[in-house]
Image (cartoon, rainbow, N blue to C red; front, side):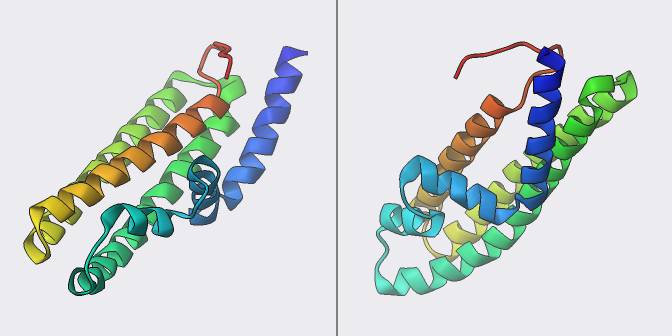
Length: 158
């Protein structure tokens, strides 16, 4: 029965994740904070009009790249779900290495974005944005981790 429930959960998760791109992550942010991400960032940043124009251009560039990384994460989770029942050593190795690459991609994007914003705006504004992004990303990761079983079926209570 436990295997059936787990398999059903993965089927539902897989369908959901195929649709999960930016829209699903944004719904997650909306459910956590009660507002969409752009609105949350705008409320947090409190920029003057001169800063805002440049900031939002850099933010839009950032979001394009962040969405690509988010899609890679979704694809990796789908692969995990597909392999979960019969996880080989090779599968586990490939999936965890992909997770490392995805996490590193987020860090590299934050560093690149920080440098651009610090140079174009100020280091304080750049740090404020990156700090908010890291916080939001950690909340998204927490929500995802609560719904994805660990290898070996450790059951956690929400």
